[in-house]
Image 1 (cartoon, rainbow, N blue to C red):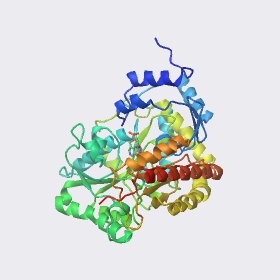
Image 2: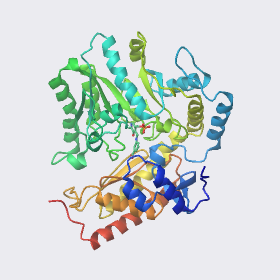
Image 3: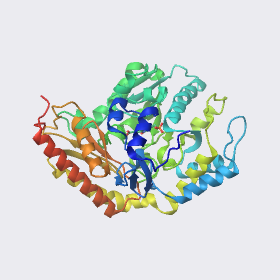
Image 4: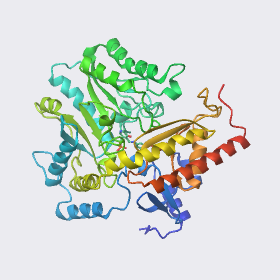
Length: 465
Ligand code: PXG
């Protein structure tokens, strides 16, 4: 067997990686040519790669390492649980202490009426649970025609067949026969890209009313649920205008549509409250959670349902579950993560220190010639790159070309910042300090300057016609 350790030269690790490892959302011919960046360890907000470079992780991994890297307490909680009971299932009338404790802790932290937890191994699995759950709910209520789940274009709800269908990513639907039947997508509340001449408030209202139009067109008796991220994450940190959510809530209430808030990114402090639904004043019937639930230290997700939904589903045997639903090690790690978030006041730190500091720094980026709008809620933020701010123009180059250039400059400057098309996105660990935010902004500005210079050199500052 090949011994693979951190001590192999980077080029050799890259060669072995390319030879046998298929990566998610990656073009392998490109990866083989360039070689993956090999991350070897991390502490706080910094990653270290196999060349010894220290990289500021502006994305908290994939929007998940909320408490930052390197917390021994989580390693110990996981090891302790592995020694005591590494695995047992929660099927067939069995349970164990970590699942009991985590379900109870979540019921305490959640908005009042959300008290029942169905565990999964990831956000995708939890959203698959939601599809079967809401359809079964309406069957049991004697309304079996209510099957359609309405979602939004450009939403991200996961990558499995079910959750990928809920998501509104056209490039995902184009592979593997998605979406499954009875999923309907309305337009997203992205004013910068799609608002035309409307004010943000007019546009927010119009986009919310698309939900009502869709319900009326299909018939109220066909629609089971509406699913949305409080703030769209992977779609580019799209913050809906202030008029959007109150109207969505009104429509869900009026037509008795179950509202599913996908809090996989927004949950666990990311928006400055425990849940994005609290920040945006949404009253969901179901919440999807994952990522920040364990700060990414162990794979775990869940769907958390209201008392009413739980009561209805409880009338039957719900024929659904995963081997790792309520995995004891993942539950123990998540519990320790929640203890740290709570006892160290990390959600308060976001609301009172980190998010206000990041907001003033982030919004100052709009003075840069490449930056159109800057959006931010709590510790998730984005900037739209544009060749002409006044007209909110797109670049003449293919969408994402400039974003990718900027991301590469960020990488070269030891900052992880993600690009979504030509929007740049950050979502750093919540424990980031003001000094580290200064460093993040300095590196971001340098990368923007270098991108701008390259665009000038290559005559790419032209708007699409
Ligand atoms: N819902 C939301 C809102 C998410 O952001 C999922 C569900 C699926 O979770 P799992 O644990 O199955 O991945 C997500 C995941 C990106 C990126 O590049 C975002 C996610 C995953 C991978 C990449 O922004 N979000």
